[in-house]
Image (cartoon, rainbow, N blue to C red; front, side):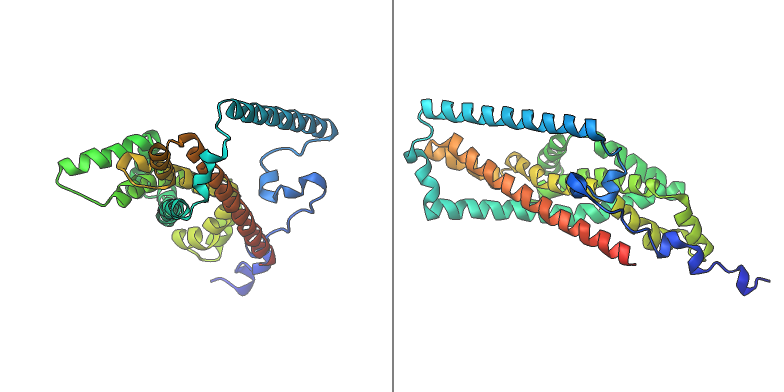
Length: 302
């Protein structure tokens, strides 16, 4: 018969109830999160000088290439206003905004489907039951090995031959979701593996079962540890949407190609779309970084 003194107290489990506070950040490393810094050694004075020199050299090289590209554009008449005036006209802007919304829709839907599916696959692969772990492992390994473009072609050409027809939107969304769910599952699993075993052992000591431990204790911390990789993979969804041309889905890049071919401004159309993608990726990265800080701050308060 157990006594009250034998029951684990919350104070005895600081790693679950009260996570250690983030280390103070100083200097140019302030942009590196606590979890990011755990991935590599903080560079010393000599390493910082090398990084600074490499940054300057890379910046100068990129600026030189950009200036050379502008010079070639000017020589070939690609900077003439008549070739860019098209993109100041409202019908063209509206056409591109419609295509942009189509791209955003693909990104949002695939993200909403792939993230929870990846988490479920990770938990299934980590399960002690072979009935769950083996099928999940097979799914992850196979879907990570199959190129996304090949999977899209399989949906485009294979399903109609079986009499199954789905809208163009889902012909693009489903393959992207299936592929990225496998990658996200490995990211979640790596985050779980990176946690100290004391986390789950302490939860078991409190009387939690395997699945409640994973859902309430392990997985939330694994998501926080894996935040940088998760963010990168979610941003990748935006770029995966550019494969919509395969199924004739008019997302932003495919619409830009149609617009450029129709108006003989292919180069200008691709440059404009590239700028839009850069802005979108920067906005998503900033939003994700803010969300990561909020998650980290919330975890620190609890």
